[in-house]
Amino acid sequence: MSENMWSYNPQSHYTPGTSLVGFKVEASDGHIGKVDEATEEVGASYIVVDTGPWIFGKEVLIPAGAVVRVDVKEETINVNLTKDQIKDSPEYDKDKHRGDAAYRNQLGQYYGRDHS
Picture 1 (cartoon, rainbow, N blue to C red):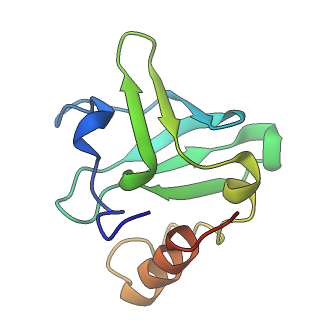
Picture 2 (cartoon, helix red, strand yellow):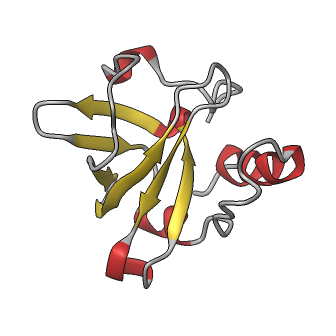
Picture 3 (cartoon, rainbow, N blue to C red):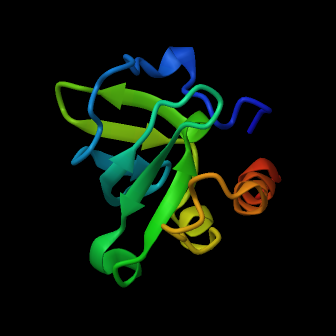
């Protein structure tokens, strides 16, 4: 992922102001859950995905740069991550994700590295 991992990709068809809460989220290899929260802060955008029973109710924070396609009609978001990458991501901490630079750096390091 690029240095713009915290911004929506212009080719994703995301339109600022669109509420993504409740949209289904598809990894590159299948369904992972639905959006619980989404932001569109400049340079700090992300989605929080509730994975439901797939990983025992875990919530994960995914940088907006991982979003490759937003389909408003189908209410679906596609991300360029695999299920395993998402499952192995750092634990979502709803108290730290806003304004904690160290937490954001941890996420950035995880999502910014090559997982292949």
